[in-house]
Image 1 (tube, rainbow, N blue to C red):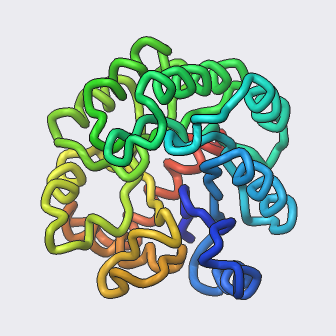
Image 2 (cartoon, rainbow, N blue to C red):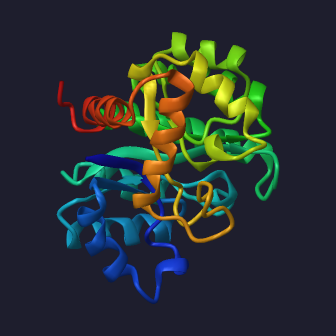
Length: 256
């Protein structure tokens, strides 16, 4: 059974049929879903979703695009609710220099602050990084993020840089991009990565794999991602699913 380690089922794209989509997942080979918050409202929605569905877990954090109005009161809310047994990580947090919605120094401040909360609460982090290669690594090192551990979500940088993250103990979130014809860089990274550091993720409703590219993504489509990873690694699809599920259990659910 597949674990989708990063989805956004609180997104408005699922507003009309969220319950139907979620209830069907167990019949489509999906064991668990981890819903990633991206804003303070998203944190509240994630807590609600994880409370309503046994197989839905959550991570609490604020995406770099939404950090402009954050306060320490918001950090208190995240810290207090991180103790909820259905919350398994702090995320998604990080830097986004592609859109540059919030000033970069503000992004770095709240990225570092949320890393601190992860360490305080004993939870791993889920890192968003876009067009922010050097600063992401610098903040992670400054915050000693390896003490929390976690995953680089939707990894989009080079195989060479991936070795730096591997040395820090991070996992790598691999999703639909690996199936794209222009996803060469992602394929190269997957080829290099050890299987015990790969997690399956959708980023639903975004980044649907081929043959659904451009449509709304959902957790059951991860079978296409697993198939592509299997082809790259020259192993069976069943082994990919088994190994990535073990990885998710180890990182998020503390199961060996």
